[in-house]
Length: 233
Image (cartoon, rainbow, N blue to C red; front, top):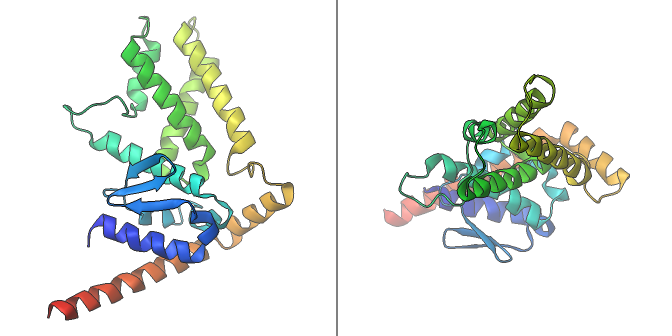
């Protein structure tokens, strides 16, 4: 069974449990679609987001379709950047933290291509910070590494900062401010009572919710596999 087929069954299962949260999402061919945005999910297994390492499953009831699309998109972009071939267009590729560090530490002015890469990286980090708790540990490590780098620039660097490094500190501050205003931990525009409910649900029943979804998907997968087997026979 292909990754895309697993994703189709998983999304169908989630839609049954959280119809309001997934309303607005569509799946056509290899693409998950939200409004005018689309991402190819044929190579990313959404099932990976349902582990106990994230609170994705336990907070689905509080999400909107745009949030779910953004979280999946973050992981697809990371996967595509890791697997992108040298001869492919890298205009939308997420640069690595090492490449980012090399660019901002360089005394040379930014080229147009470097500027595009940096802007894409900052936009990506902004979304990642917003959905940090719902992201895979590998992605959270990217954000952790970025924060460590910024801390080093602010407090551990005895040399004079260049303009790119100063801008990096400013961008990092903006990312954290926006995260505190709109991130999952803050509850976004939800009132305080809703935030408390979300935190309680994530801490007390998150693993149970995820487990229920996983078991349901496994059962459906087994049944479909058996049906297919008997049809072929």
